[in-house]
Amino acid sequence: NKSGVFKIVHGNNSFLFVGDAEYPAERILMKSYGRFLDSDILKVGHHGSNSSSTHEFLEYVSPDYAVISVGTKNRYNHPDNQIIYRLEKSTEKLFRTDLDGAVIFTYGGNSLNIKTIVSEKEIIDFDI
Image (cartoon, rainbow, N blue to C red):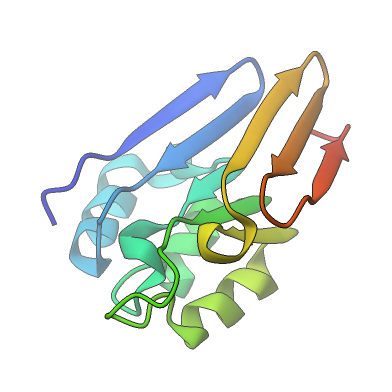
C-alpha cells in the first residue's frame, strides 16, 4: 500500500491511476482527498484483485470508464469476478488488457476517443 497514485487533469477531463493500492490506501485517499478523486477514467488498483476498488471508493471516483491492467491466465486469477461485476455496474464501460489488449485514450477538443488494439473496440464520447 505504498503504491504511487496520481491524477492527470487535462481541461475538463481526468484520469486517476491508483497503481497497486488496496483498501487501506483507498481509505486514506478518500479521507485525504475526498471528492477530488472524482475522475472520468480509472486505472483500477491492484490488477482488479478483491482487495481494491471498494464500493465506497468507486462512489468517490465515479468513473465513466475503467481499465484493469492484467495479464492473461495470470497465477493470481485476476481480475476478481466480484470486482468485474462491481465495475460493470458503476461505469459506462470496463476495459481489460487481458481481453482488449492495449487501450488508447485520445482527447480531441470536446470528445474522448477510446480504441483497443486486440478486441478492436472504438468509442467516441462527446459528453466528456
